[in-house]
Image 1 (cartoon, rainbow, N blue to C red):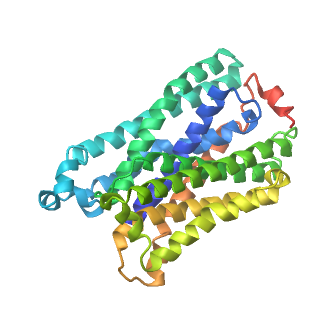
Image 2 (cartoon, rainbow, N blue to C red):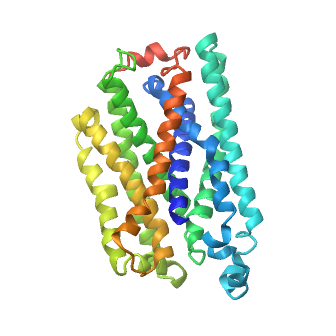
Image 3 (spheres, rainbow, N blue to C red):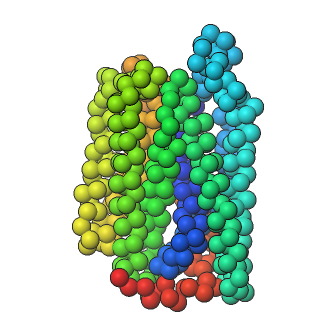
Length: 354
């Protein structure tokens, strides 16, 4: 079931991250990203499945989360103190509210964008700017709450005030990676507008590079604050990940999630090189899955020994989640334009040059 949680959070992070990027484009008034906004919109449709996919876990809360076991709470001072928040009913309400809000805002933004393909109405862009301005602060709250609920509370004794930002940075990075790979692939196969150049790809590469650094900054900040304070209710979480085989994985995470993609995308030409962008995107997606695994499994496995096959099978649900995301994207492309042809900024964006 913990493997299912990792797969669920992978789908959620790609869907929510893509929806955030759609809203960010409207708020920032970005021009260059208009031809690829529909790709973000298609991946953002994954948020529509969050509530349904959460049901298997909601039906087995006691077997997934230690805090959902009444006998464990009664014998634990910290869990009693956290009980008003880590309550099963409240937990279910929170994921329903988060999934419902994201679905609502996805529906509004997507409907206006698709309607604009037919009407060319510029007022729909203004409406989406207002909707996005309302969505972003709600997104900041809900994505933090969901990350605390579904990842951090796997170890309910742990305290961290920066975990929500850590998950946000990884989610946006993962969504940028899958959008970048898809954009390069579609461009190479002639599915995007012929006026699109590698200058558009450069902006994607620059964003990937920025969020690689942002993720590393937040990860290091979280570690540094906990190391400096040296409080037992905080440092045991990192100590657990520095014992036995988890120490190797912790070191690998630094290399895989930061050093390799940082090196690949460091130079300016690399940020617009299609081959490097595709490699970096797939690498970052793998790193995100590894990160989710590292967040969840040490609390679940501990020092328990398991065979290679067991560890390999634990990546089954994340792979299935990735397949579902691709399937959602595929069906969206069958019913909608790949480019927002009614957007008033499309011509300007197609002529975007560095």
